[in-house]
Image (cartoon, rainbow, N blue to C red; front, side, top):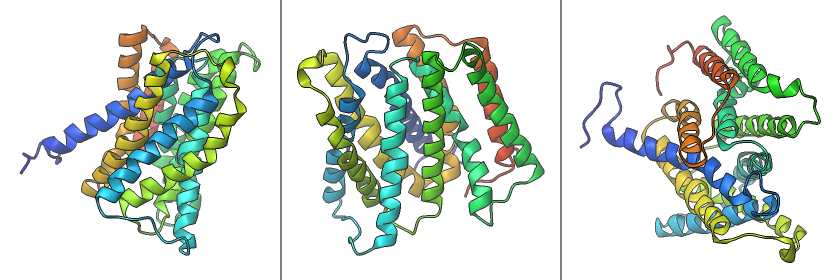
Length: 309
């Protein structure tokens, strides 16, 4: 039995949480390698990176699910399949496509920073969708502060004009953040499902939907080496498969509130990886924006007074 730490969580919980954070933060660094950010003459196109990682992820998840003796819900169960399809689109296809496209222009650490704002969008949507999640004055203030952080993060490049490549990329990142938030709301209102079939189902849907993109690219026009392909393989096995399985295992073992802390940890770990491998640095505006967004998230979630469920 694992020792309980002062936080109320065991050492093994925090170890698995750290592994999950590393997988998800590492996805941004791996995507940078796959598309060869800043080098339009090399790297894999988004239309190959996206279906590549999702197909690999789906295969790995199917292996895990079948090994556990589980299966997908019957196709006649329309309500569950509606949720699975929605999660596949808003939790994988759309955000992965948007982030991968954006990372052809912006640094991996900046792309990861936007994930910290997901709870802000979730809090905004939840107050309209769920009767038990109405905003208080504190949570409203938190949402406003969080949006102020997004404005600060986005602001300096926006001043250069909407045609600026970095501005377009950051718009894509904001849209990806909104998709992640919407998928969280979908999962929040979903009927009860076993975790592994749920993950396998929506990653499989995402893989099938994205696969036609691969045929929009002429292979002779692609100039990629082993490192680009290795990054896609790692994206598929790690963030798209093992991380999903680990997330579902942890959410059953701990709580959604505990795992929401990845919104704090992923940008920090991604920034460390970006500096370590690519010597990426961020401006002081990004640091101010990060503080505002995390402060907003803290207030939106009850000013630290929300207990884990």
